[in-house]
Length: 436
Ligand SMILES: Cc1cc2nc3c(=O)[nH]c(=O)nc-3n(C[C@H](O)[C@H](O)[C@H](O)COP(=O)(O)OP(=O)(O)OC[C@H]3O[C@@H](n4cnc5c(N)ncnc54)[C@H](O)[C@@H]3O)c2cc1C
Image (cartoon, rainbow, N blue to C red):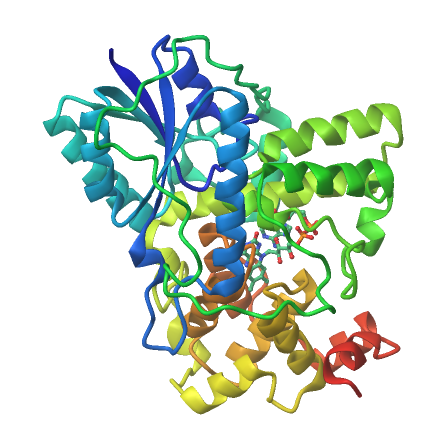
């Protein structure tokens, strides 16, 4: 009997999972696969891994939870380690897969891998079908082709608010077909450990804003807690620039990054909250921030690899006057620059894998505009360290703060000392991390 395989990547959920939903419409046995790609965990010349310990641990928990959620739908999850283009085709062949279904990507590394997988699958008569599903607004529902995306966020926002409809979520149902019998010699595979992936263990820091646990189950709990139990959505706009604790912002980013929750699920929940509790500027503002997230993904799609170029989207790198100074870079990483607000934020990132949006803007600006260090090093460090690292949001925001992206204001500069006074007037945050 022919089968369909759902290839999970940064879409580690069952709810509102379009590839999974489509697979279940095919009326053939469905299985899932997740492949831990060794290239994602390699050591970089800058002295850290492409994926660091916090993010790896969160990913492992997310895949484990996915396995449990899929089980409830009668779907086994295969786990593989290695390059997807090498691991997937033999599995597809053994399971007589007609289709492999997954999520469409916006950036080149992911697209190269998908291309390589597609080519090898074609050779064995299997087709790779990809679905756009990481954003709130579907790429086909933009009021223009993505190549014509406005370079200013406000223009984008206004145009989509006027013209684009957000598609409804989908809820895959348990599969009805006869459960698949594993052919001889085909193993489900087991979840690797941090060590298997070459990643060092870490100690959790009690000062972390939140205990981030990976997976769809934890994502739903956080949504429940933030919206309904603590009723925090109605004050989001006033609190979102905070620095300490779980409540100042949603902390949804980590789950969104691995796809443990979909932005459309959050959007539908905002609408429900507005209908049942309160509708105000704050409830709108969470939607507004999710549009920023969409925007960076569309920007990545529009500009392709320019997102990663030294001179960024605008091509004006020479304006930065940057030097490749490893000593300064290391001091920044370790929170030893001597600027307390920067150091406190960097220590938080080092010890917990998280930093507030306010913190990120300041430390990024400080690295590029004050220390004059290569912005791409900073972005690479964030990629390794952030528990919520997401390629488009990270590299897009770094372009923006470095002044080579799509910030309409020329030469935006964060006066870090002033920012500290404004956002940490009692020095509570700095004290927390520097023990002063
Ligand atoms: C230099 C720099 C690097 C960043 N790297 C990342 C990254 O790798 N991954 C990531 O998800 N965000 C990144 N951000 C954006 C932002 O800082 C985080 O999304 C936010 O701090 C996450 O916390 P939260 O979920 O509590 O946000 P909330 O304030 O609760 O916002 C809700 C959601 O809106 C989205 N959002 C909010 N602000 C932004 C923004 N500026 N850009 C894109 N989406 C946004 C996120 O999905 C977030 O979860 C970066 C920002 C900067 C300045």
